[in-house]
Image 1 (spheres, helix red, strand yellow):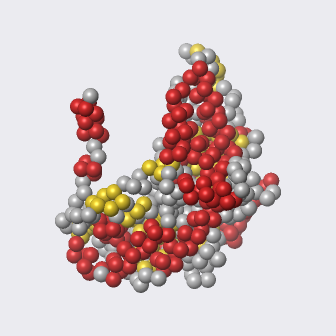
Image 2 (cartoon, rainbow, N blue to C red):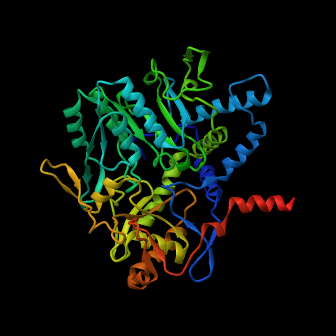
Image 3 (cartoon, rainbow, N blue to C red):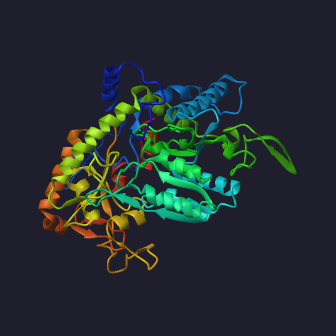
Length: 508
């Protein structure tokens, strides 16, 4: 659990037994679970989807609800015809549900923004740089996704990366709180905010975000939290145990919360926007426009959402969050924790498989993200073979967290001042040796049978590395990807928009 977060900030519906039954029913209600692909041996099998950290599958329950809502579709910003009035109210309700999901108090606003956390963090970096121009330092951690690192470098100034704790086995854990305290003290006068992920997209390790907020506030800084990975897997809320532990900004991605096609979300203190012109301007955010001037409205979130909103996406996200909240994020977390433990035990028992990051749940809190490598096979070959021979979908490479992955792989050294420096060169980072890992990541739809299928496949790869190597060749552009020497499954053979359109036209 994300520290002291309650079971859900949306009131769960019914007793635990009923909610567990609903969770079981929901497990099969996702688009794409029955999608089947051909394998090398000529058979076709349903895929085993273990790539939810990149993007979750879409909840069909929420889709069906939104499809009914869209019978009333019209643009917002008007209340004088029925469709516009209904959609305007539904869009307002979508904001309210997102706020309720994270327990946002009345002095916070919910802003739909772009396509994910990347958009939200870029927006807030610009806002906070403008609001606090004399503070040009951001502290973040070594485990951050590029989305919670590069925007701060571009828009604010200097970014300081705090190291991570080591568990008793020497594996990387959560942010080192003593190192964080030292960094905050050192940069207190220039520190704008501390930006930290609630859970790593590489190791799944959970950070103590409310304690981070308390330390940031003691120095007059703010706390920005990237909840892209955690929001679908564990309860998280704005408030902590005390007022000084409240998060100032929380960003989420709809496509990682069972609602692909949804916008990203910013939940932030209203005061952070006051007195600043919005970063994006256009229709829907002005009270008056003259040829030589314009007046921005004061109302939030309206003034921060220029243009026609992504209504279907916003409603889909809100319906999904309401569904999760009514079932109870406590049960969602409990269910995933048990499956994560099972997966860690199955994977850890495979000879030659190394798991990265602290993987003892009694030592470090984590969500269902497991990264690993096999001793005798490149990560790109492993991911390709899992797909081609077993129908198991996992992601590989650096997961948009290159500094952290290279550190975990021992591909970084240190300068004379102790700062990390990348040691990846042409000899060690070529087409066959590009550093990276393989990642299995869990969602609500995954079961022990999925884990068993993946573990059995990995065990076979570990037992026959030389045989698999003869079946693949590396792509020569340096990507770290490997492709089968004979088997192909072209995307266009599976589905083509052009062909689908023509088929419909010819059927009429």
